[in-house]
Image (cartoon, rainbow, N blue to C red; front, side, top):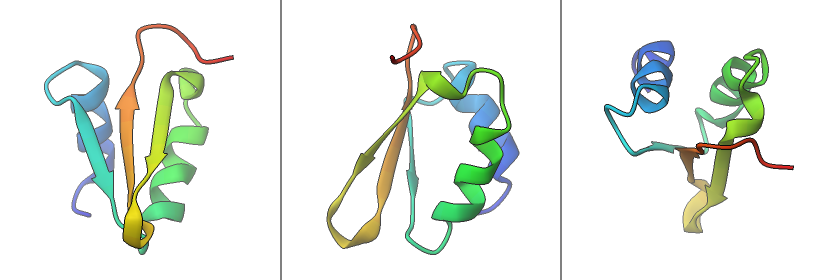
Length: 62
């Protein structure tokens, strides 16, 4: 996936609703969001074929 930090910022700012992350990009993407203070606002939903769709929540998940 090209320019992951920019895509994450667009998700956080509401410019996009979700990001689809491929199996190959999963670990790199996860490393980037785990470092963030708002990590608990990201929700990943597993899809068939190893993809994960990430959304940004208004409130932190528990």
